[in-house]
Image (cartoon, rainbow, N blue to C red; front, top):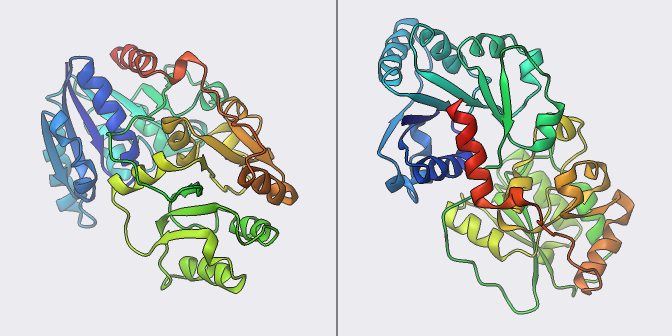
Length: 348
């Protein structure tokens, strides 16, 4: 089968490699059609693809947008199957879905927020063509609104190219906090408060795996909080973009992964944090607020804390008086299991 994997935005590259690998291992010919901003990010596995098309969505101008839509439609209609890596929140995806209605090419979409199935008019338009959606966790599948003529399935994009592990100093314990600096989504204040209760010579290092730009409001606010509390010795941070190889090298070497999420019901029902999948990928124990304990995947593979109990948990970790929590015992964490389930669903 000739398959095109499409991403029109600059996000969610982390979901591409898993799908490329599943498809090529399944004997399918795979092209990727991606926003040009993702070109450097897929360089490590570009050779798996039959062909790579890069483009930039036209930002303005009705006639220019129409011309681009025609060019893309002409390209896409030649495939047996189209997989939209982000099948929501995009006027271009909506317009492509409408433009492809008259053609027999099958379409599958990845939904990063399943709430859109029931609440978004744009999603209803996209679903005129895309009738099969993948969501990113079994819990999301269980909670997704069931819609007539729409098929849903879960998959875990938790596989990444092999990269060298970043070496660390003896006795250091690394706790990775993946993702960009984001005060709305991450509870840095609780972490800093907890660190104030630890001895300065603890072996813990918190890896802020996202660019900490002190010139931005978000970055400066975090740096000032760390600096004012004299906690710099607890953190490893980066003031420039982290390459994919380094990013995953640090994750592999980490002892724990800490999402540090603010509490939101959406994370229990409709979407996931990328930190969850990164922990699943490398089978690391997560450190999560007790709010997230109802999620079965986390319950089996996490250590939980209440806001006023984080200092105690970190102290136990640093003194190695707490056993590893992660088990990853279920079959669904196996590559073969995920690949076969994915391939069966996309075949329809």
